[in-house]
Image 1 (tube, rainbow, N blue to C red):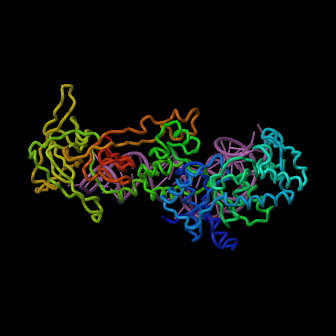
Image 2 (cartoon, chains in turn purple, green):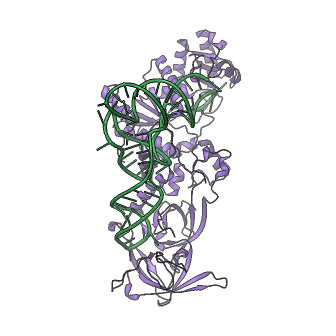
Image 3 (cartoon, protein in one colour):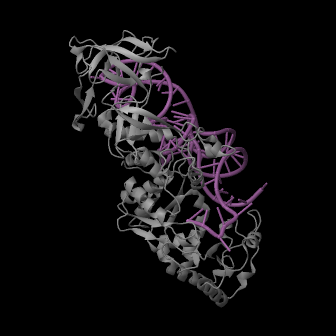
Length: 546
RNA sequence: UGCCCGAUGGUGUAACGGUAGCACAGCAGACUCUGAAUCUGCUUGUCUAGGUUCAAAUCCUAGUCGGGCAACCA
């Protein structure tokens, strides 16, 4: 990972230089209520990457303060994704829920300081008191309660004497503040719900604004990095810790990641999954980390992408082409080469023995000898790509046309002599001859051919189901368009076809190959030896404008 | 018509008062047993108007545009 810098690191540099901080502690605080996507990857890279850069620590903390939204199902998935991305929290795994006792005590401190009170207003009524941004709000009657009354009521809230919504604990700040978050925000609510770690111990739960700053403070977080929408929460974050006299981390906000041709909001992703518009959270078309993993995107390419887009406060939409560039960049280095034909056209080598199976040792990587070779069988009947033959080809077309000699990748020079057509005029078969002297792919007389095409033996090749993935949406920024974003789904985002692959392309789930001249393909988790399943990770760049 | 934040090529980002650079995308060419990779070249930018200064993308003022904020969500 290349060392990067950004405005946050400049702040940290300053804090270190001034002595305000002597060590750096960050945190990645997901709520376990959904799957991680590439937007989280940006945050993870920032949080963990910053800690690594400054030889500090990064905590993985589950921000589980709302039991009705959360589920253990997500906890393991989140851990898997963070690990897969390449980060290690070591001993530093934390839970907001493990601080519930301390948070309760802090709430009592606030009450004793006269800085919190129990409020019996309904949601609607409080809304009326809070007012609108352009005018000051009014003070709820609950503000007049004595400390003793508040202590008593809060204790009753905790012991389960009240229904959900009957009371709420509010910070007593300023009902006239131009920042609505400071108009006596709720900090504890009653929720008779079982929590996935604390069970039924609690029926009151702290709100984000109260909980998060305390979590950060308890853990000794020095820099609490979050996305831009929390900017207006920062005064409250600071107010709570100042009022409590607790140590103060610094909250710094950055712009969240947006990507072209996809959506990133949890709500929309959930809809796509629930309405079966995609096939689950790990559908390879989704921007979820599990989806990208299944698609075959290397974790390293996602890290490189995140490093390159940088961290700023400017709201932006990054081009998915940049992500794809990094995917190809890594895969070009690492993916062994294989041959596969996705749109087969049969070719008969008329001067080749029909019982012969010759084998060739072809390199796994053209530039990396150390990656070794694999064995590829060649026979009289092979398949080539249908668009590697063109009847009326001009001089720029480098593939088969009648009378033109091309190279069959790695084996022989071949000349196409005849195209066999059916009654409707469709080409169903090509008849070619090879030059036996050109075994290995080059002629002894040194003559050159312009084109090299890939092929697979008809009898030795293996049929595979191939998922051709494309962009999920037709529009660059579906979330920004008017109307229903689901209308903008790309109907061709998934095409499943049957292709023929060379025997050495059959591998276990997760293996990625480059099919030469086509693209990168990853073996799907549902693959079997009988019916191999391959996912197209990315196509190769194609500068041929034929 | 309240408060907060932001604005640099098509996209993302750098320049911290001193030559507007990098990457992706695009275009053109070289090379090539992948029309891939690699290599070379090219196109395109400081939101507007004032001000400060020898000098402004950078500092100041005003405006414009975009985003966020009025859950007992995070």
